[in-house]
Length: 250
Image (cartoon, rainbow, N blue to C red; front, side):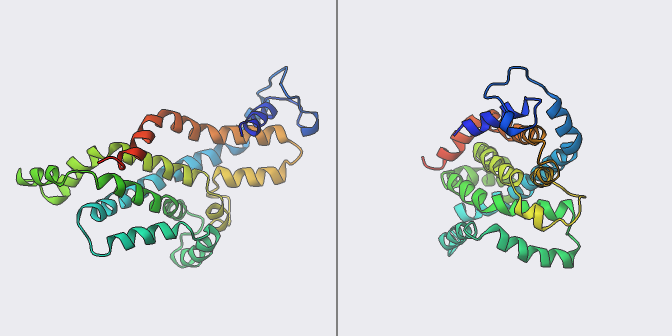
């Protein structure tokens, strides 16, 4: 499983751009490929960071109160809503993208950061709702009621009590929302007709078409695109473990 990753890094470090001539172990590492990758795809990397962070903000802003309502308010049909939320993840992205394009054309959201952020947020929203609900079900209602007895309203108790207690789950949901948005290709390709908003996934796709003979630079771009996700996963691994298992123990 790790060999393709190793081959990607090894090819990116070799000056010879021909794949057939690439060595298994680079004897003379060369970082020229990374310089060309940053020069041509630096803007796409920045776009991906902006879009992914925006998608995380939108996703958590919507998912946290929705999950709390489903977990604590005893809504009629709450289980059906959760099940329907899971079903939405089974719909192919290309189907959603084609439907969104028509709506975006009417709303002037095609080729815009806001349009792509909203579309990418929808990728992580169902998962975030289900994950946060599973955690918030385990929050004792007595804690929230005690805060309300002390004078807090429902919204204040949610912000000052529920959200801090759900920190691990929020970090986990936010991380996965970031990864979903970072890896998105279908929405980036369908909802953008110009290069004004070009994430790195679309940039690599176009880069391969324009530089198919320069695989060193292509692989260097792929390595650079994997670094932010890898750093976040390493930094948040303890929160991920606690967030995923926290809802299973009451």
